[in-house]
Image (cartoon, rainbow, N blue to C red; front, side, top):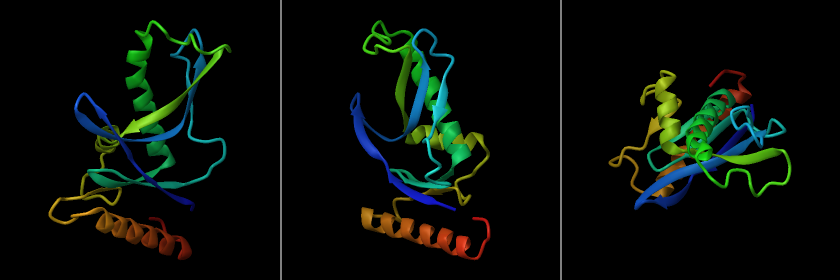
Length: 157
């Protein structure tokens, strides 16, 4: 099992800070954005992605990450359809977009899939437990060591 760790980046949108990761590429024909394909990467570089956000540490497998990417693209597609400049920069008939997955999308997707905050895939960083970034990184290291130990003993995480 290959494990990859990713930290979310932040940006301000209308005065609010939003956290996101960029994973994968959406490809679609220039004239039909509804006929899309999502690639998380050409090679299978990871089986499990450990993501640290502002509100939690998320352990995502490829299927859940694909579901988050799909939900993010469908959300962006509403804006993209109404854009007057849609596809004008590209010269080819195939358009590629990076997939931007926001932390709220990850949380909503996990809740829809039936994972509760107490589940091992969805660990909340409660303010009275985690006070700074170093403690959060220690928690990530602990999660990774548990996953590596499980890999050595051939058990599922």
